[in-house]
Image 1 (cartoon, rainbow, N blue to C red):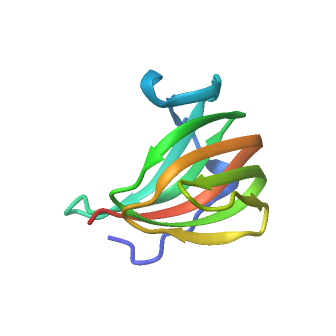
Image 2 (cartoon, rainbow, N blue to C red; image 1 turned 120 degrees about the horizontal axis):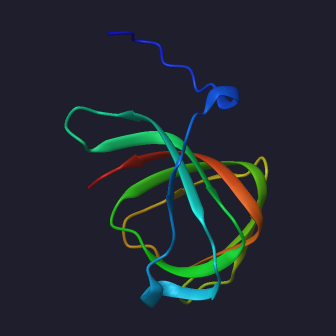
Length: 117
């Protein structure tokens, strides 16, 4: 087993394509593409690249996630809080319990690390 795993963005390969559940869709017809690079043997941690086309959907986080935007523009609308505009170069953590709407204004691509709690 190799102990160094580079994220080679030029060689992503074929992504897994998904979409928000119909009951969570707020606007548009966003398509999500995920290139998962790493999953720990216990299945509790994932890392890779995620991308979405424009649209908006409700989210409810039960996991912890670190995100770093590579491209695009999104707005996070946390319930009861002011919206936060995010773009390439922005990094942040979403903690378990985050609820709101994820809105993609311009196709967004991010690096992620997710820890299931």
